[in-house]
Length: 103
Length: 216
Image (cartoon, rainbow over all chains, first blue to last red; front, side, top):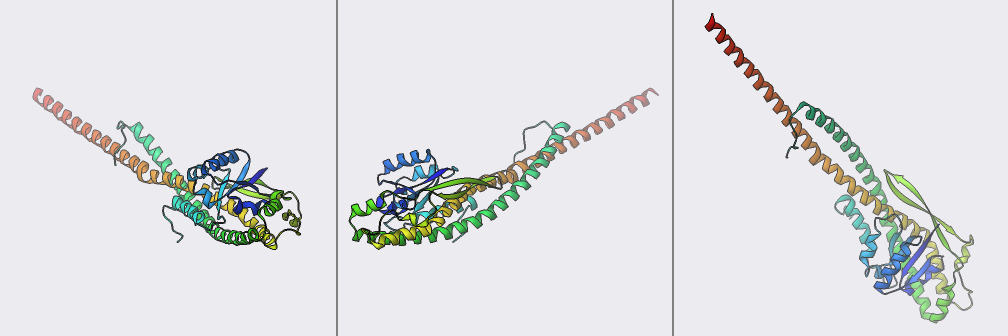
């Protein structure tokens, strides 16, 4: 059985803990990178990361992009929606098709 | 296009012809795979996009409720209210094989079946905004999980499509023309050898006839 984790600043993710997701509040890039690596290796199938935090550790996130587990999914934090999530979808399309054809 | 570095012999020619047939068949199969992958991928990526827009809107709305709750409740009270969740979520992953890409299918399992267990606090000392925030998150949770599934699938399929496309292109624009040209080169060389052998024989025959006439 796999678990589900959420990373980001506490204010953005605290509500998700009520639903049974495990929250790992952090705002520092180095700590986040370490945490992500640790979570990826310990049975988490999905790790939701706030866009703000994800922006500070792009390489670490890209590393798991083509791994089967975990899926790292960006969610908007309390600071608002930066559009990084949709940008990720666009990257997938561009990789597959060669150009962004969905706009 | 450069030809392969081979000896112009009949054996090589046969081998190359066989290779060309295999390359053509592989090319056709890979092209079909690419087309089908692309069709499924585009379907999924559209769903991914729609889900993402929906989920992001819902999360933003929930964050707004949460911000209000933060405003009206002391920080410690809010954190304490959510500190010990009653609910726990686990995922079971099964895999689906789509054109040899294994995409994940998540099955969510909650520890308790009671949907009210998302409220891990008594209602006496918390703001109703907190209830709203948690309730709206609970509503969007199935979509959030589906989003993870679809987005991961899209990423895996994108990688596979790229790989397949490269293979198709390599076969179509490099391997197959190379084989064809090498085959043509060997055929011509062999024909040329045959012609020169024929002329040599004719010449030898002439010389022998000449010699025979002089003796007579």
